[in-house]
Image (cartoon, rainbow, N blue to C red; front, side, top):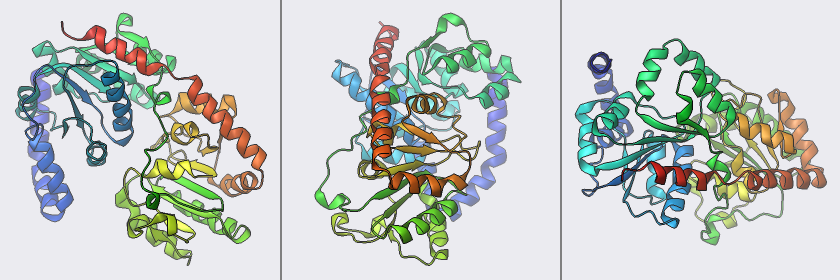
Length: 418
């Protein structure tokens, strides 16, 4: 199976190389990404006995930050290296000044061997759903223990991997422990054939994240006596209904401020074009030097890592990605942890357990269609008592489900090489 995977991967890279070359010629950001990916860990100092943590994108990096801080607080003495897969994850990890950050190279021995030689890992921790066959086979060959923490498996993944069970089991053979975030995720990984003794439910580390943003300068904080609607992690197809609702609400509530934060920064130009169609004024966050003096009504967040500071001052929060099963929703615990009423869509397959808990506690509202957005927002903006009740329930839910961080740290310690 190893030989077949490497042959197929190598052939795929050869076939894709002309397209990669052409895109690199056209896009400077893609060239920079290729440069970082091929460099791997070469920019890092030579390390030894390293705890290697891999987190794919922004959400996993935020979780990795909590895990790293917890590890150091509990006396972790090994150097820690953090790899990411996406450019946004890498940018956030660097911005947060996390230790020894690098982009994971392509899943092929030529590049991965250089990483292993550079950081000399004694343990690999995978965050959530990151499974790379060559990376895992290299760990097996070198006798490096592997743990998946905050593990999640969607129903879609079960269906996909279920068609090739032998391939899936070959991929994950090197993982010693699957620390799953919920019983549902544990049941799904067992359904795929993973041995029962390897699987445990430790809870969701996202409930342990400190969602209160780091105090910045006063000019970085939004100051207003009015109400603020924050639309976070929006996806294609959502900004139209958002703008319709926002424009209608601002006619009724002139002091209402709307903050729109697309999930991916590269979509900001597209969202700008859409906002212009409504013939209303808006401001890009990157164009504001002193946010505390800003007097506008619509703010488009085109800077990475700023969303939580807007959640903090929000009256009501809508979290995007829930009206398309392909996206599967985004992190509703960030505003919930700050005691904010949270609205989200019906497709929350990436945050099933979180959505279920918030709904059960009365801390969140799940919509079945975008048409519900305007009447729901109008109701909440006009009912301070309901907002308070929702926010308190949301915060209580997050605090009441904490504890997974300590359990996963204990697991990491118990599985490290002697």
